[in-house]
Length: 190
Ligand SMILES: Nc1[nH]c(=O)nc2c1ncn2[C@H]1C[C@H](O)[C@@H](COP(=O)(O)OP(=O)(O)OP(=O)(O)O)O1
Image (cartoon, rainbow, N blue to C red; front, top):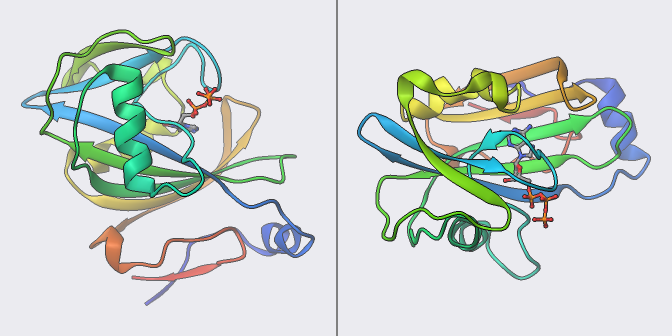
């Protein structure tokens, strides 16, 4: 089946005009029976929101290695093997650069969560996830993640709070589907 995953002509023509390469980021969630670790972002992008732990992938670093490093830097937890569960693309209207966020989960870690310069960690029961204090896209894809599903999403934001369009798709196995490289990839097999 061919699935029209990405946005249409508008986004494609923007890419042809020389869109900037995607900004590649990671986002990692540690889960235990009935609860998940979130961090309150104290500064920078997404400041004031609860989220997983992550940040920019460094040059020459794999996405997985970046996710492991950021999780440790921001929460003090060590989890050498994270499972990739999703890729989320974020377009902010007016910004030529897309954010490509690679989402990981794990139930295996060592250490004790502790506050960093950037994040204040806190365990939340799965019934009390504070969606109103999180990125507005999270309420859409968290249920898939919490069910152990794999997924792709594309969210178009106006400003930091309003989603004007989105597509979300569950995939059998995230590793079997080509990672979208930008809005010029309008189809994706599944
Ligand atoms: N719409 C969105 N929904 C979401 O759930 N997470 C998002 C998101 N947009 C970005 N993120 C995540 C990805 C990444 O983990 C984090 C932003 O990365 P960074 O913490 O690196 O940003 P900063 O601007 O603070 O960078 P540094 O100053 O380099 O730490 O926010």
